[in-house]
Length: 206
Image (cartoon, rainbow, N blue to C red; front, side):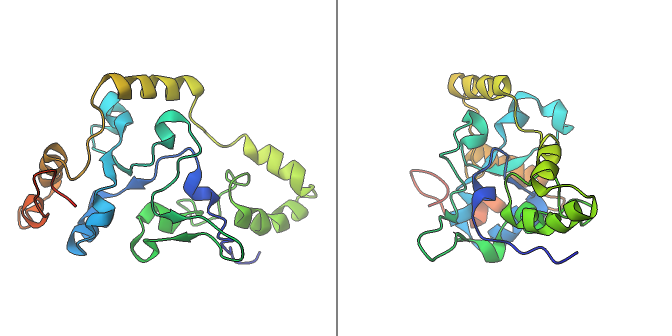
């Protein structure tokens, strides 16, 4: 089977899933790189605030895209530049993108995922050989694998959207609360996050 080739369509950057960021692998790297343009888009996952036990009380950070909360596919990753004409889609932070984006579309075993065939054009080309080996038409193979996806239930999106409006569930990384939580997550106090972020009357990060 051939190597996976990204088609740079940008569709994976507009799907209804959280773009999670790892505190140690992503956030601390962006702090060291002084990428405040990225950090200002990082928020605590509102789903964690609603049900921290589901995440074993470990704070989960995400890129604030909006679509995962409201099911609005018009929203997208703020760092995506859409494809135009002869120019493919591109990521404005590709060189330091989150680990979850670096791993996509591979699973934990290093295999190209089969549950994204309706999202990723590259995975369709990759798995066409596999479908052929199984003696299946690719369209039938895609239909069979499409059910593997676990998109958010409509009721869940509505509940989260309602709670988001009724309560202050948007906690940016650069807010006082976000920085305090981040500092508590550090294993050693050698790095004081709040001291290296620029301060301003309007907020911590510009």
